[in-house]
Image (cartoon, rainbow, N blue to C red; front, top):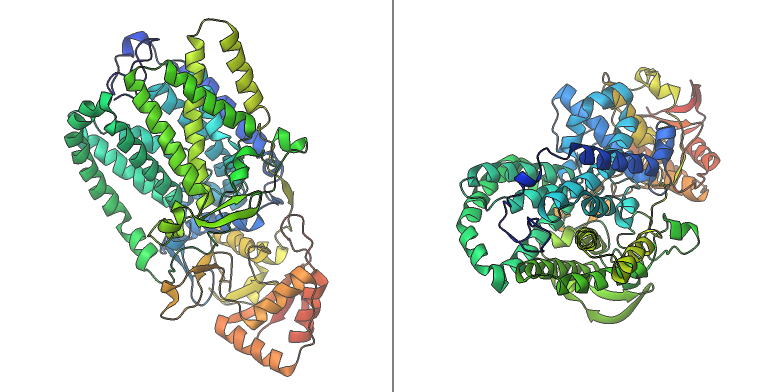
Length: 617
């Protein structure tokens, strides 16, 4: 098909299996290895703060998500050791549990990295996966571009490294093991483009089905965007007159392969899809406001906070938080992409123009979706005029998506254009045009060169937990909680339980936790939008207020009676307060306020190892 790499310097577009083998006597392993090492070095550079001490360093901008993914990795060890459900966990949110299929379960990762998690802890597994995600994304895009679009290593490497370390993915490196798995997109795209090969529809259908099942278990939202991009691209490409006949001839083979894909993926995903849409503790939509988590149109022209431009004071805070700076390409890169598209178009034959048109339309499609239901500029809603996403927001899948993340698809679009531009320049005679474009590429990419993700110290695991002393105060699978109760902004209790799960042996459950769940646990819970964590009860909210704001109320017997009722609901047998507790973004938690509240509510604690303990009788 016309997206394949041409067999000569002339930008023609031959069928999907170009006769390029004679040009390569041996596979370019040296080039592949060089690009892989560069990608790995950049990934280690970005995550070096965690590597320096994975046990006591945490991502400053997203303490909660790191705790969540560390918990999942530890649950993988627990699941394999005890044969528990991979998509529903009873270890958190006692007494109800958590529907992991309705969250991001990264099941494939939890299983593959279970040996490392058991040996070194989920802290090491977390930073290992994060690093490999970034490096693997860059390398997978490099291989995809090298195979399907360009001849030379340098253009493919340029496009691949941009895709792996673009601002949006550096932003998501703040805790998201799902979104940093950008390698899923080029792997899926590769298999989709191979579906049309004559006589291989069964094989390629099987491979794509397995690939989709793996992608769903790691990054279902990202897989949805990839499938949407494939549909838009192939739809636009197939309608182009120069390739219409080629597309028509390939259609029967592609449909047979897609039939196999549907059967394989449907079989592998039947249970997780059931749990996601109809299992216990499901919910409708997402726990986040889609009119808040949209991409400000000015963000596309801005520079990211973790970049050389941001270091120089030119960063922007238009995103909802530092984990969601999904575009932030900057004016130079946006201008370069527009000029590059026009330059490539002028030099392309009709077949290649079909590809360029499809790439451009796909980029425009995702740009519009990323703006969300209303247009925003510089932090303000421009007008109460609905954009296309307003019509999609209540449809299945779209109702669970955050609009601003659609901007991540433009990373792939820009990576493709960068690779094609660099390839074209390599075949252009030296002169003013070539020098101007090379300078433009440098000026566009240098300001967004990434800085390492921010990290901070976090409270170490108490000896009370690490040494197993807790077992003297809590029954097997009983409920124990740290103070304050685990939540995204103070997640110590959740990760300390995770470390116990990773070691195997006796376990305890925790109330609350950081996860997505229904607004209420009644019959209508699945019909309402989700929320972060469990619906708060009076007692856990007392400790959250104390930790975050230093607020210590005057407690009465009514409060103590409510606490007895809440502790009975959770089944809590003991609570403890560590000598050090961790907040997010270097935020200091008010430990003394927590201690005062606990003492007023429960009486004087006893000192056990390095914690203060209250037994709940």
